[in-house]
Length: 147
Image 1 (cartoon, one colour):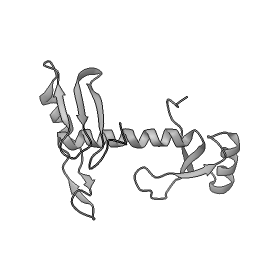
Image 2 (cartoon, helix red, strand yellow):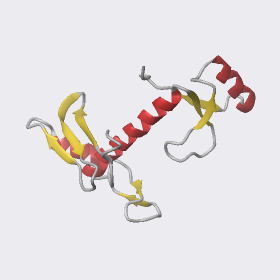
Image 3 (tube, helix red, strand yellow):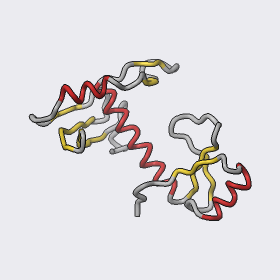
């Protein structure tokens, strides 16, 4: 991902794996427009597209200040994955210096976490969260923290 090159769309390039096998690449130059999807000759493209077609409707703010529920096509699917990866990368970075948490039962916007300053998740954060929320909280901890 390249935030500096991103304009109307997220600038990224990625490999596509399906059922654990490399099946292609996808990229966007960040200047608006569709993703550039290239499958390998042996990629099960029909199976991949069938999988994508099973996705539920997603909210989109494209051309509207109000969210619209739209069907996820192949292009939108890869854009969503790139956006999720960008969001995850930001969370990992933030989790290195803060404890990111959510309180059970509270509604959060996608990608939004409450933050407790003072360093990454540790016993001190656990104690504070238990005092404040009892057992009704969950913490974001990255699987592969950056070093």
